[in-house]
Amino acid sequence: MKQIYDVAIIGGGVVGSAIARELSRYDIDVVVLEREADVSRGTSSKNSGVAHTGFNVPTGSVKARLNVEGARVFEQLCAELDVPYDRIGKLVVALTEDEIPDLHKLKATGDANGVPQLEVIDGETANRMEPNVPAVAALHVPTAAITCPYSLTIALAESAVNNGVEIMLNTEVRRISGQEGNFRISTSQGTVHAGLVINSAGLYSDHVARLAGVKRYKVWPCRGEYVIIDKSKSHLMTRMVYPVPPKGGSGLGVHLTPTVDGNILIGPSAQYVSHKKNDATTGSMSRILLKEAQELLPGLDPRDVITSYAGIRPKTVSSEQGGFGDFIIEEAPELPGMMHLVGIESPGLTAAPAIASDMAQWVANYMPMNLKEAFQAGRDSIVRFREQPIETQAKLVEEDAEYGHLICRCEMVTRREVMDAINNPLGVRTMSGIKLRSRAMMGRCQGGFCSTRIVDMLADEYDTPLTDITLKGPGSNLFIGSTKDLRKHEN
Image: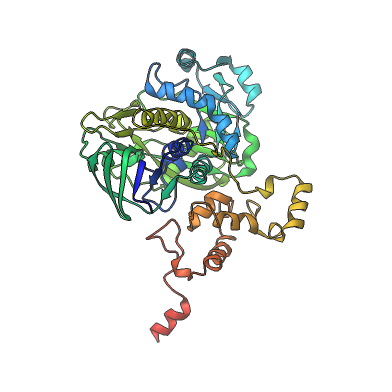
């Protein structure tokens, strides 16, 4: 670990990783401090994976500007990093005549924000597009797209590392002192010195600000639960289907989103919780989500559900206030040299590249920013065997027998893909890290077949005992010992 950096970024979510990658274009020393064992462990990996167009954010807001600017470059960014991007479009559906005026209001907002090709269509046209959706009218958003949020975050972080950024995982920030030009950041891994600090801690951005003596921010955690539908039902819809947003709500309503991997997401819910770590899923909410989703897509069945998950929105408005707050992106006057990014909820994923560009301009106000000649925009990504033509698959197996060994049957993930995930540029060794990089353990059986095989591969690759293997980092060990040892102890 180096001791002194030009810029320290706190938080390895999609925004922090995007900033790191953007700053890696320049000849400056940058470090990312992430308290978890991997990037994308929080809100960044637990959302709908939608590249939003900006038709439903207030005109003139910071959020609207960054949303539209981010959407403009999003496809190119995904192409550079070999991250899935699919412009499938979206329908915001009116289920009753009373909701039709709301569609026109959304279109007017989108037009004012510069969103192209918006059109309010009648029910007949909507039904031709999505025969399984009982719409009486809809707002057609043809430029809306989907991506894989955790793949993008990981790709941004790997690209940043390849271009000279240091990412320190398992590094919790405990205190921030000093001033512009000489910040001292006390962490669980020692003290880091930096000329500038960017607080991109997401859900904990208010906490990080207070560590530096800035007490003006407050983040309320709002849990959003999702249900994942099996790939066998992917034929039921071809594009995103959203309801008219509930008035005064804390979310956009329960919507249906196809994923780039062929599943359908139902959700999210919007429930304020008292603790920022409370990302538990509940059977009662899963049933509510499915019931509301069946109003938009009656062909869904409870037997199609394979799993659920939840994420926490970092909201800057309380449950009593309701609705949405704007992004807070500011250098607090009481502490120059430290930038705070607070309340970056949806559409934070889409806005991330635009936020990163703004942060690079901010850093340039303090120090010279000379472009590197050797900046590499791309990265060496994992070959997705299941996505290759059969001729390519045959060639891959001929060149490397590990491609002929299937580890995850549900997602068709080979041993070579798992090995490439294990040997990732960030050095992540958790089961969750392997899962997010390879899609192993994400299928119908949720790891019932492949997880034990991956555990053995991790143990062999790093010559480590099984008791050291964790699900998601320190404190989540999968094993406490062997049954043989336990029997010896009992005897």
